[in-house]
Structure formats: structure tokens, C-alpha cells
Amino acid sequence: MSIRNILVAYNGLPAAESALQGAVAMQKHYDAHLTGLFAFGDSNLSGRIQPWMPQKVQDALLEVDSQSSQKIREQFADACSAIPADKRHWIENKGPVHRTLAAYARLYDITVLGMHEDGAYGQEHLEIHPDRVTLDSGRPVISFPAGHTPQLTGRHVVVAWDGGRAAARALADALQVLKSDDTIEIVSVGRLPFAQTLPDFDVTQFFQRHDLSVTLTELPRDRRTIADTLVDHCDSTGAGLLVMGAYEHSPLREGLIGGVTQTIASRANIPVFMSH
Picture 1 (cartoon, rainbow, N blue to C red):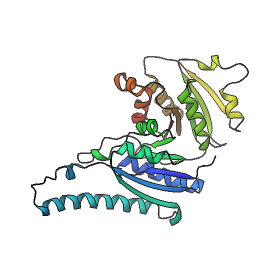
Picture 2: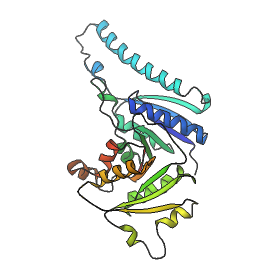
Picture 3: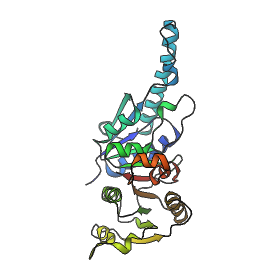
């Protein structure tokens, strides 16, 4: 199924700028509809408003917040100026950021986000965690690191494969964005699942029947975490996209002892395509 409906979360932060560039490139590539969503919670300024404050002070604080929203809306419009008016849309929604993003993402083919970055003082209400949106929405998400130039074809794509449910979901969803001129590498770390494939069928045949050629790589498990091994491998091979399942283990477990999803969502130097 071709991508027809793209959602991009835009909040003006550096990684969101890369996400917006990536989303605009995807809109052109797929001739899709592009919706920008500015989801935001209460800022430090609006949170400082107290009933005892003079009305002029309250209005001044609210005006600063309003100007920030207007600037973000204008930046989105500038970046999308080449997109036909009937194919670009803008939404602002004040509320819990991740809950809002996940709710909208459920109705889009793919959601484009900037990788998590700690907001500067006064911007904490804008922070986005792509892994949480992936988990809560049930839809594929692609996140871009700050400063990344989008590339949609001719990439070296690394697909992290452990044979689990989340990896299988990501593999199937990624067919929307993989192209015949991409070089696809299926990578396993430590578990050697390629030696335990189903009789008479394996992961390579899945891709070959979609006219995609792949190679298999089994990386040994060493003192590094799986996440660090994958990130280092992507860096050393010049990968342009990492495809992975999100939260094969529970979010609580990853939150307590760390895990692949959270680490890669904050450490990767290339776009990451995730599904849960």
C-alpha cells in the first residue's frame, strides 16, 4: 500500500526541523497529503499565571505563548510552501503531548518525528519521545536526528531482526518505504535466529517476493549492549535507515533496566523506522 497520508509532529526544535524536511521530501515522493501537528502542554510561562496577578500581566504572559505558536505555524507554512494548498494541513492541539500525538497517528499511514531531545528551559512542554508514540499509536513512526538531510532512495537499510513479534511488525510496515534500489541488510545480534528459521522458508524469501534483494549479517554479542552494537554497525556501514521493532520487552522492563528501543530512539545518528 502506497503512503497517502503523512503526519509530522513539528514543534520548532532542531530535530523537528529535520523531521519536517523529511516529511516534505516524503510528501513530494509519494504525492501524499501532509499534516503538521503542533501538540503542546502548558508552558512554564502559562503555568506561572496566578489568579492574584493583574490582568495585564496575565495577558502579557499568554501573548508570549501565542507568539511562539504563531512562529511555529509560520515556519511550517514556509517549509511547505511548494506543496499544493489542498495537500497540506495544520493542526494545533493543547494537551498531553504523547497522548495527543498517538491519537492522531492512528489515522495516518506514517508519522514523522524528530528524535528525542531535551528541551531548553521553558521548552519542556514540547518534548517528544518517538518510542512512546510508536508504542501508544500502534502505527509506524520514522524519527529523524537533528541536522539530518533526508534520503528516500538508494539507501543502505539495516533491518534489525530477532524473529520476534515487534520485529515482524516493523518488517511488514517498512515495505511502505523500502525501494528496489535500496541495499537491505538483515542484521541479528547474538541470537543467531538465521540458523533457526522455519523449514523451507526464511526472512530473505519475504523480501525477495517483494522484489527486494537482501544480505544477512550476524553480529556477535560482546560487552556492548545490543543497541550500541546496532548503532555502531549502522555508523560503520554508512546506513541511511534503521528498521526495528519497538518494545519487544515491556516498557516497564526497559524503563527499569534499559533496553534497545529507548537507547536507539535517543542515540541513533540516522533515521529510525519503528513499529510495535
